[in-house]
Image (tube, rainbow, N blue to C red; front, side, top):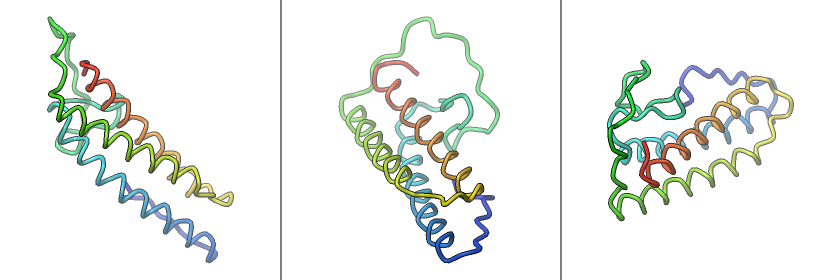
Length: 130
């Protein structure tokens, strides 16, 4: 999320860009919470970003004896919807020009990586893997 990101602005343009980025980050936070509510407890997203209810330490598990069952149709549809909404936020992030500001560029890149990790975890879960 946006915690700990200092968007120091030297110009009105940078302030506007930081504001747009902050709005998108807030929307992604909400969608990440929805994704976390759909994924099984203990799921580690992209090996780095666990859902909020999971400890920040990596969860290490051996391979399951049998592949997990696919999610119920309703949950799979919800996961697909969240994934599509996250993809829309990814497109919105791509439209934010950071004007050469390295702090904004790093913040945008972190959100892009977070969205990709969330989408990957949701897609894998929908297809019956965790």
